[in-house]
Length: 256
Ligand code: ADP
Ligand code: MG
Image (cartoon, rainbow, N blue to C red; front, side, top):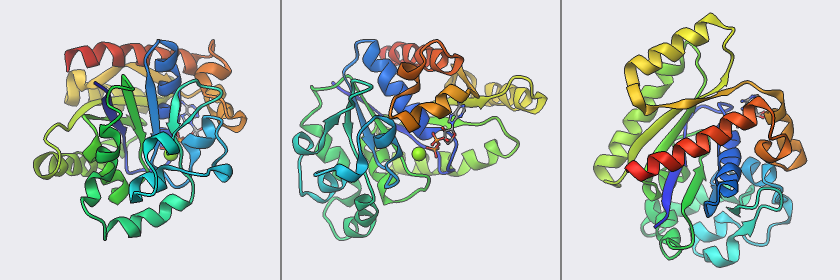
């Protein structure tokens, strides 16, 4: 049975896509059968996985509106080895089209169901909004991974997301839970980040992952080569952190 995780945070630029691509590649390296679903019309996870978003015949858009099945829409990341359900600008149109379709919040969940035995992990890269696309991600998932920067306003932004997750849990998806908070782009030299990090641990206890992803330029350089950071420079501190995070995820799913 595939374990399905949504990587979500309604803020942009907080490391969702970086987390998805690197976790997918690290899980693949650890022998886990992994599918990455790009649910952002920007297609950053697609490009960062080495799949050209401008050359897609079928994409996650076709899957959501019923014009293709997973079999036709999925590709394999040439650099990362994992499977990917790619996205590009077509997906922006799905937002409007979905409104008129049956089971509009459950389109992704329904499409993935037949492939439950193909994967150990499915990771969903959400757009920076609490939109119909994100809702499809949350309805398909067993859990949410929330990447966050340890900044002053981080906790404030978190409450909107936590409320949304609670509503989805209550009304649409009883399986959904918060798996954990992942500290990313961490700079241990900054006292404020240390303080917020300690605050998070105090508030959320073991919902905060042990792995901490540092700010690391190699992780930021990798996407322009279409290569996941953990493959691009696996000795870099950022890559090491994502590999440790993958091990932690493998350990966590055993307890779910
Ligand atoms: P999101 O998907 O939430 O918008 P991204 O993963 O695209 O965020 O990250 C935003 C920017 O920050 C990108 O340019 C990315 O390369 C960079 N970035 C992400 N994580 C790190 C990190 N740990 N260290 C350095 N740069 C990072
Ligand atoms: Mg992104």
